[in-house]
Amino acid sequence: MGKRVGLEVTVAVAEAVALCRIDMAGVYPITPQSHIAEHLSSLVADGTLEAEFVTVESEHSAMSAVIGASATGARAYTATASQGLLLMNELLPIASAMRLPICMAIANRAVSGPLNILNDHSDIMPQRDTGWISLFVENSQEAVDLSIQAFKIAEHKDVMLPVNVNIDGFQLTHMVEPVELPTQEEVDEFLPPLTPHATLHPAKPVTMGAFSMSDYFTEIMKAKDEVIKNSKKIVLEVWDEWGKKFGRHYKPVESYRADDADILMLTMGSMGETAKIAIDELRQKGVKAGLLKLRLWRPFPFEEIREALKNAKTLIVTDRAVSFGGPGGPVFSEIKSALFAGKHHPAIYNYIIGLGGRDVAVRDFVGMFEKILSDKDQKAKDTYEFWGVRE
Image (cartoon, rainbow, N blue to C red):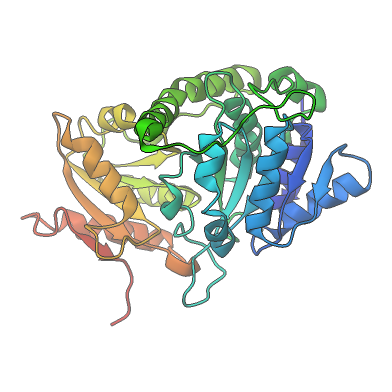
């Protein structure tokens, strides 16, 4: 079995990635991701990790480098955050279109402006349509586990797509928490060597990322859509295998005290652990409250969302990003879309919380529940509110 140690989460992620025997990393430092880059660099420099660490001049170059390396058949990794992710945006759809199994950590951070280096989800939300599989973690153990699982998912012959693992910046990345690191033997058994479907090599030239006229472009986009939708089956298989091997189980939508709940809250990322304490307090007051945690962002788990909400009377969706001028936060919009085609429609409310690293305490989550429960006439149904805005 693996060893249990106390590590900063970014360092633990770098250690997990090293256990995956990556061939190269192309990472440009940006707060709050930099410690991943620094620790990977140290592991390569001291010979612990036999890989190439490519020093690049920007996040755009980092993604270009891992695309090139992955195209040659290398197991490639990168990490970024905020403006760095936005700088990569031009290349993200190319990585998925070329079916390159790149893995990337995103230390989620607010997007400027104004300049803010703290946590929310405004960096990942604009990337939701770039064709990447997207996972969210809640704590350090999940960050380690999903970083390893990401390679197994990405490299499956029926997937061959890039995967990003979202880790809340500072609120999670810079915390020192106990974590169980698998042994090298355990990871080797779980994650086989990469078998690419096509590689660039001077001895056997191939065309990758070719130009497409309108005659075929629509068909290519449909094929890309189908493969990411179908990847959910592989995600579930990998999570099932991980659970059987390590005893830690993952689902697209996870729940806490939700089976008999009349009112549910949905979170993504590290806020879920704080919300769980609020649920316990509400239960002690006799409120049938429960929690849903959305782990799989893309492909979106429509069926699991509908199943989780089949008996709920009320749902509170929390967002950590703003869809400016839209109907609410981006997660709120997705949940409403998922419920539209279903038979059951709970009253749904939206709170935009924790922007730019603002703390959201247990009392805040309790307050959200209490405010919705007092809305007897459902006047605020289908609307959104910025929680805690000062007058």
